[in-house]
Image (cartoon, rainbow, N blue to C red; front, top):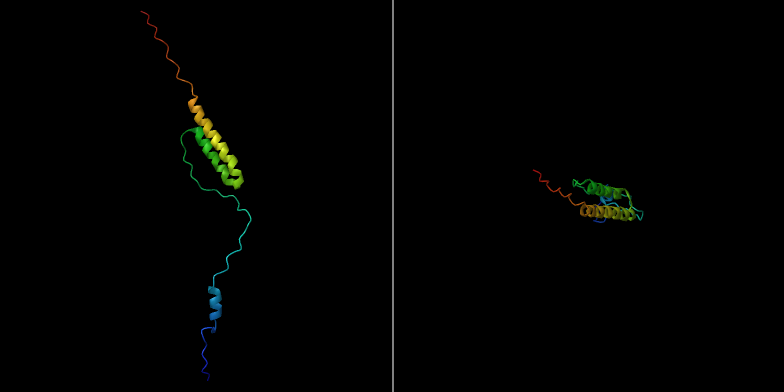
Length: 104
């Protein structure tokens, strides 16, 4: 009979296998490839003004573009919204009502 006892550095039986299985996996190597475009999931609530709603809907086009393509969409939407606001100021004045013809 042996009086030898394993020390803390000595694994018994399947302890080494269990320790290896419990060890966290190494983190994946960083990738420097561009990430594909993904929708941002920003909700667009309709305003009730068809021209404005159409311009805001155009923002969804940016969801399918790489980041360097977003600027063109944002500038287009900004220009369109500015045009919609300008059109509100340029509406014709109300037509004056004709003078009453007071015939007896």
